[in-house]
Length: 260
Image (cartoon, rainbow, N blue to C red; front, side, top):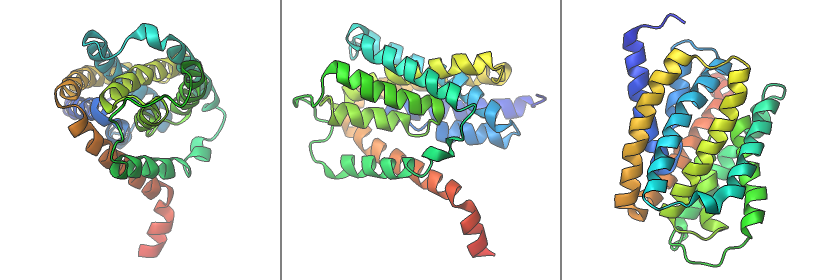
């Protein structure tokens, strides 16, 4: 595509901000996907290009968390494998099935996540007894949310985070770190199948990837230094914004008819 360097510069900045937000609370795709669509990239290529750039951001945050000891990859092997398989299946099915089947459910789940973190006083403190075995968590949460990310995507980080807090009973900082590992896994798996389909726009995706990598690294540092005090309110805000955005998109024709 013939896109000016000014536009590419804006996309780089958008990806940097999205990577920063995504490392903290998820939802970076709320910025990058609309930005890609706004410059005239077709929806399928926009989604694929977004997976390309977001894979670098989630990798950057994951690497930082691993190096700082917040995550042990050896403890997450089964969850990583299940998430990869689930996302791969989702990325294959999205090419033949309308993802609109999930759009009505996701805003409701995001609102529930926001209210959970808002009103549950101990949400994210960790230390409780896990409500499911590691294998059970990997096979249900890992595979299920991985499938959703490959198939549709918005809110994946929030869904992973609340499952780690509510089901695995880990603290919000550890939940954020583990979420990024599984988020990178699902991004990478979906990206492989989008590459096979020839969908990503490499020039744009790689430039945005640099911005996303830098932003995610900065966001990961904030997670380590600021911790639960900052992440919990951000999860609430980002989840509500994503829910509102999806609901507006779903009901845009109805809102247009009311205003006319």
